[in-house]
Amino acid sequence: MHTKLRTLALLLVLASGLPLHAAAQAKCTAVSPDCVIVGEWDLNVGLGVGVRTNPVAGRSDIPLYVVPQISYYGKRFFLDNLEPGFTLYEGNAHTVNLVAAPGYDRVFFTRGDPQNILVSAPWSAPGVGGFNGRDEEASAQELPHHRRRTTYLAGPEWLFSYGRFAGQLSALYEVTGRHHGYEVRGAISTPLIRTEHSLIANAGFTWKSAETASYYYGVKGFYRPNAALNPFIKVAYSRPLSERWMLNAFVHYEYLSDEIADSPIVSDPSVVTAFVGLNFKVF
Amino acid sequence: MATPLGAAADTMEPSIELNLRPRVCTLADNDATCNTTVRAQWRSKKNESLCLVIVDQPQIRHCWEEHNEGLYSVEVSFSQDLVVQLRDTELDRVLASQAIAVIRKALQFRRKRRQPWSIFF
Image (cartoon, rainbow over all chains, first blue to last red; front, side, top):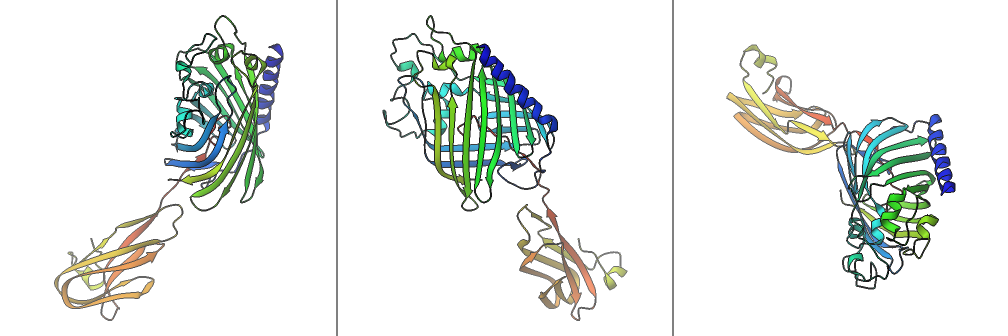
């Protein structure tokens, strides 16, 4: 636990130290993977094949066939898929937002979570993917279990750039009254290739307070995890094929903290998400 | 409303009224030119012999003999304000003039967030 906190503190210090010398990025002057038009909706649909492994014992992996993305960026207000937010400050090198984001862990427990409905094929047959045709609430388990409801976390988010690197750090508090826990999310990304091929590497972490970790991975009377720090890496490839079509692929590997991996309901200490497909820009 | 010029400007009331549609053309970020059908309609209190011309578009000319009104539609491609004129048949005098303004849409851009935690790209 103390080791984890020290690691988290180190990551935060590193993240907060970098932007002291932050270099201003080029101002957005055209539509690009990093820049959007203010005041216009953007809808993309990714069609392909992918999977997210499920670390929860007895749960099937989550298939990914359709990955829609919708976003709107106003001058201040924005909606980025399931995450609304408000920009307090935007400069060339630093941006400060207030954001609300869903708790991601629920996707492992409930097929009806919005994040699963969006990406899993509705025609998936029981046993083929998802949750073997049953939800958490309907399944019989030997261990006592509780219902994990949809949660939203909200708090400040800081985006910064440093040369070829772009980073973000957010400190979020659960505001839907389910567990009152915290999450700190941090990540840094850099382009490895930026020609007509784009290859971007990301590395980061999610720190979950004991309340957050317990809500998802605790077992009443049996196991109560402390705060957990999950590091991850992600590599994303894209190549435009035409004005509307783009080839996309990514692999995301998240290593679960011992506090989560040691839970009796967890059978795998990692989560791998991979997807390859075509992205169609609707508008 | 037409702008009376030349002899027509000698009187307070315009003798020839020229109206254009559209009044403006708005270019989006990726558009270089307006490609549209320009509809020009003119009316006069007395019969006139005149020609409709477009500045910098010498291939477009349409004339009327002893008419007190006229309507002409033409496909035009332009990237700057388009000036449509009614001139006498010798093309010496401008009898009326109107313009279609080209407005370039002032697009604003901003940086998009990255969500590496999310299953979205």
